[in-house]
Picture 1 (cartoon, rainbow, N blue to C red):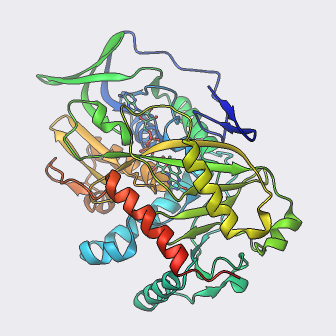
Picture 2 (picture 1 turned 45 degrees about the horizontal axis):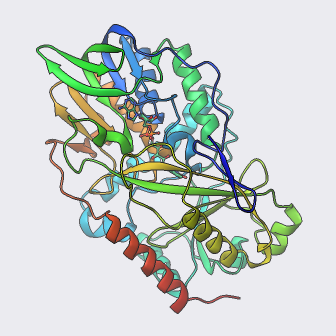
Picture 3 (picture 1 turned 120 degrees about the vertical axis):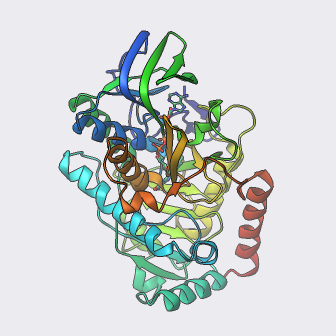
Length: 435
Ligand SMILES: Cc1cc2nc3c(=O)[nH]c(=O)nc-3n(C[C@H](O)[C@H](O)[C@H](O)COP(=O)(O)OP(=O)(O)OC[C@H]3O[C@@H](n4cnc5c(N)ncnc54)[C@H](O)[C@@H]3O)c2cc1C
């Protein structure tokens, strides 16, 4: 259901990228038997199920709504090699793994690019790379320091980077680009169906029960019996009793899309390169142009759920906050109005890194969200499928592997999210250098 509130902006409960497909797959009804059941039909689950089917495994993919209808079709469409955590935190806490994690993140991008090419998925992918920018002198100093440490390329000024002057400069990341994630999700769904994956939709799993040599998956109108189960339910992991505490904390992320903006006005704003822009705030801001010629603005403020998570329209206060950020960064576009907005749930792990492992001998999980899962979830799903079908564990899976299903509470909670937002706004105010 969609709502138009106030100035004509449409508040969507689902994604703004694509319409729902008409060919909804059957629900689980009665008894279904399979070798492997993948629960959760996001890009992670679809990629795992696809690979399992290709390896000759009898696989069933069970999705509570429509495959792709979670974060996978709602995200901002940045295919980037960001690892999942702030680079400073990574170097501080995971210095022994940074190199391996970077390899995983880089390969995730090339893997997903290859997936798009191999299956001919038309998702308006553009190999633009992106610009990691600073909006304050403090952020600029931090970027310069990182460049020094990493021995990477030069920090560009806003003019050199072809971005508005409110972005003081930044680092051009050449890998990856932007795409329409709704089209990618629907393309993966079609590819999985063509490969013979049995997909069950509108089938929320209620309970997972281990029973001797099989696992029973209980649903409203049926039961699935499987030898192995892979959970890829991302932010919804906690809905099932089998999930240990702290595996995934759901966080709400909102996207706002403006009306289309004329090319001449983008030039006038200083966005001559049209490169996608992400800031280095604690909670980043990001701006990219869509295939519709509109600007998609994301994040700036994240929320924790009150009550159960599910489809809901975005919060008006968060939408106003995102637009405040947009108008600050693009002062010549203050008259550009938001056309629509939607939100989705990301699952934050306690380490803010992707993770995989077993919950029991027959039930496993993989989670690659933390706001960077667009390339990582499909790659991790693929690696897990290879592992489940008996292959040796790939080095990129090893680096994410947790040998015991015990997790510490993460740093993400309502208080830290509020503090991060406050710190970002304070830095904006105190340390801002605007044209
Ligand atoms: C607004 C927004 C912007 C983002 N921007 C980016 C970006 O630009 N780049 C990037 O890399 N990442 C981004 N992300 C994160 C990215 O979308 C996710 O990391 C990625 O899609 C995760 O894929 P997934 O398959 O793990 O999870 P999901 O796509 O969330 O899939 C999980 C699926 O499990 C299903 N499910 C849940 N519970 C059950 C159950 N009990 N039974 C059956 N099925 C169930 C859900 O319906 C859902 O379809 C963004 C996310 C959001 C919300």
